Length: 323
Image 1 (cartoon, rainbow, N blue to C red):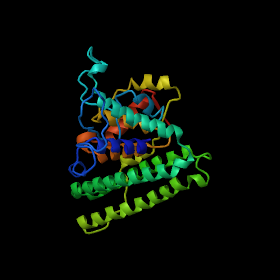
Image 2 (image 1 turned 90 degrees about the horizontal axis):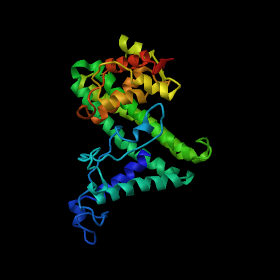
Image 3 (image 1 turned 90 degrees about the vertical axis):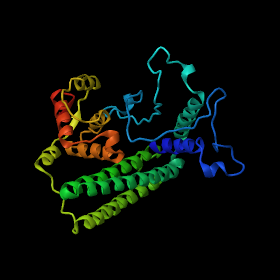
């Protein structure tokens, strides 16, 4: 879903904005090369960015971890009239609405008709986009090493977690493609995503080697084996799971009382990563890596103390239980 969303969305962004080289090419419209306009709409460009996670809109009903239906959303901002008496159709730019309709309609059309024949294309697109995301993860991990030079063991642990969690993210994306195989990924049809999975695993080893080379340059030695602190070991022993009743889960989650410094979206992600298999420490690594990949200016900073405290408070309120 993310791969198709980003593929079509990137096409829209590229073809509905002005680029000097493209606009000077003969035979193409100017300033946009494949413009989508509405008769009564503006002729503005299509400015958009793909972000790792956002809720705070209608799709959050689906992406809640306890529900777990894959979903994406287009969020327009600033929305000056939302939830006001002037929030009406005449306030909407029909050109931008048409572009959004094209984006969502294309995704729905493609995925609703997708069969095993589309698996090679889906695997290739997901893998290629994943390589770009993993390259960003490496960039972030290298920055963590440089900024934490004085605390070498801790910075190495954090940097290595960014690579580890990025790889797991891309593997989950590739594994989702088996939904289009008639045998749920056990036969020849699934060879494309399975091959990409193996390549992604090898890519993690390459990224770890790149990271180690950077560590050697900074410190003149190889990084020591990662050891967990007492707090991290305690967090690794706790495995939370959601209560069985969705009603009880949300009622009790509303009673959670814990003051923390987590960004609101990262607070939601802590809950979303609860699956009865990940430990507190696993959840911390997943959420902190996601925040780091986007930047502290975007998602703030995630600490183990805040994640453990929030999960403990959710257990106390009986939204979660410990296995």
